[in-house]
Image (tube, rainbow, N blue to C red; front, top):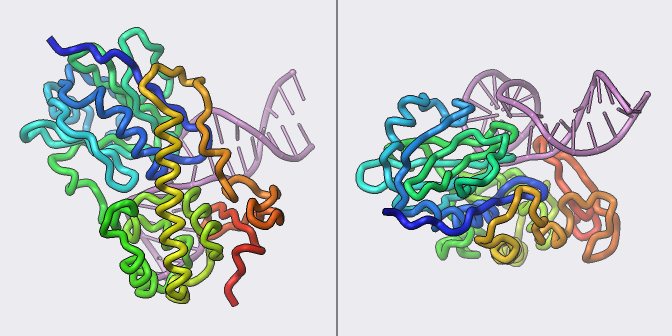
Length: 291
DNA sequence: AGCTACTCCTGGTAGC
DNA sequence: TGCTACCAGGAGTAGC
């Protein structure tokens, strides 16, 4: 008889979109509720979430499968099944959530996929805007796109980063958002990192000198690490309703979503521009426009 | 290689 | 108050 997981887990995003720190937090939160659990039943209310895998095929693949490992790559959450059971690769996109609910918990009305586990809990993929994906595959390699290095891995050194920047000739903002360049950064943390490094989002990557590249590298590491720590402290394994307390990291933003408010560095008003169809927040005093 | 535009979606909000 | 219009935005794709 499988042990009953004592606490249901709910996750709520206050604003913005899940990026590396949020995805890491989700992986950590669902991991203890999933590993060693076997799937007993499947319910899918929005088949497109399965990314081209039909509902019958998905059901056939996952019912009876046992979760063995839950890990993150970029903004993807990978759930490996034991043996040759393949895996589920999930992406939260804009509004996706993953949580392990206890049997009596209220079912979120935006639930797209429910997996009933052998301890009675239910693993749910919830997604308001339906952009998220929850895909079964034989192997992660079959569905994960080519991704750049993990910014928190040892291989992501300042030296590697400096050279990678110089090999490209792209504006910093779209380059840092490019998951094949570095995996896991999104709109929020790119704006924050560029501000912390005093670099304009339109600055071309191969124009950074050594000091600027190191500054940006340092900013990315610091911001991601602190965000993970804050998420870790603002979420825990106690049950929390969907209306639960808001997270803390939003208050740490220097520029994101702070248009018109004072720059924490120089007190000038934060500006909002559009770069590559993305809302981009910056301080035009601290982040001087190139040329 | 790098850019722009388009697609997928709907809750929230601004404007009237 | 109630309606409509529009925006946010990750990633995949197409076209230049």
